Image (cartoon, rainbow, N blue to C red; front, side, top):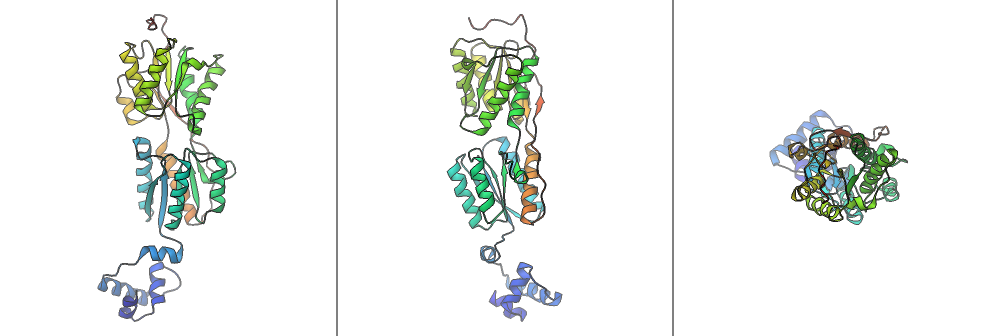
Length: 338
């Protein structure tokens, strides 16, 4: 910076004000500084600037996982939007672990991010509220309702989405409905199971423990969970898999047992991953508006970084997408229980 100041005939403080866009600068002085920068090929130390101003022109993003179309869509939307705002995106992985997520937040705070967006499955409301109230930078939370700070919370109504899936099967006449859950160690998994039970209870159906098996959101997990259900010899005419990957695995397990979908068992997933419409049969599922949720989350972060006022954000709802894998219960369905 000293060489730039000498070449432009100004002080280092003036060069700093020009680069940081602070204070009143004479246009001619500003032009001399930029001419000196170009002539010398000077590149400012952005980290040093950030430490000095506590602003880095960056938005931090922490996600639970780097795999799958859900997070791929989130990343694409965030990158496009932040670039359009003239800022930079720093992304890190929370590894689906509350402790690691906290470490990631501290890392982004040290990088002087102007705001941070976190998609979390593991942090609870108390932890998140403490962070919002104590961090030196604004925090926007995805995938968690925060009634005390709704303007900082972008979330999908998981229970409503699962209710849609189960209610669809009930409306088709199914009463023996199995469920492969997501991990019940997460709020998402618990809420989806609650939505499933809610739809059954409203139809006068008592949820059956033998028709419920915990999965892990992976294709292999869905396959093995469905194998477990089938090994019990219990009868079911419909199956709700709490994400589309597990539905793929379940479809394979059903096929290996000679069970036809949807003629003998109707199958419904959750998320509306791109693969859902290309499965055979095409998968009935619940669509999450992840692009819109990501857009709103980044918009809130950008507004917070600019110290603009925020409005509370209402929860996002799911949309049932009916395809080939579900159909009305047939009185002529083949008995596959042997």
